[in-house]
Length: 139
Ligand code: GDP
Ligand code: MG
Image 1 (cartoon, rainbow, N blue to C red):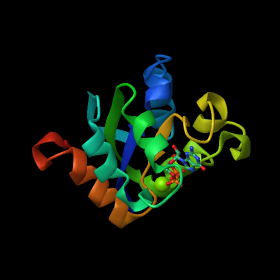
Image 2 (cartoon, helix red, strand yellow; image 1 turned 120 degrees about the horizontal axis):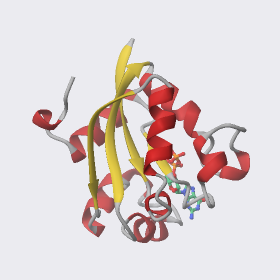
Image 3 (tube, rainbow, N blue to C red; image 1 turned 30 degrees about the vertical axis):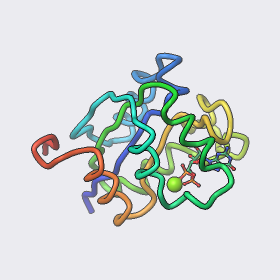
């Protein structure tokens, strides 16, 4: 099943010029980049994106982190894209992430963990539409 998912290369990774290395892993996993942009998220944008976490104790810290520098937003397409990308990302906490995953190799800690990926079809649709309109999505 060909599917789309939404990815963010987070500020800790852009600060270390890791965009190319992370995108290479994404493409090597068979995922096609069908849309991409580098932005600096506003506080309001980040709060809306992460609204599901608004009651969590780390919410304010997460918003500060996500607005602390530029991010690369992209739409990825491929076979089982959502699950495939989550698998190559690795666990949220890099201490728990499997060898060979993006977070194991690049993440600094549970918050500054280098990448975001959608966790389900409904969230993927919400997240893609949050940052891209249909004219910006190729393929
Ligand atoms: P993900 O789907 O693996 O990205 O993880 P979640 O959806 O649970 O959390 C969203 C993001 O919030 C994570 O990617 C981290 O950047 C951050 N986060 C998650 N758990 C914690 C935590 O316990 N402490 C802090 N400071 N940040 C967290
Ligand atoms: Mg999540």
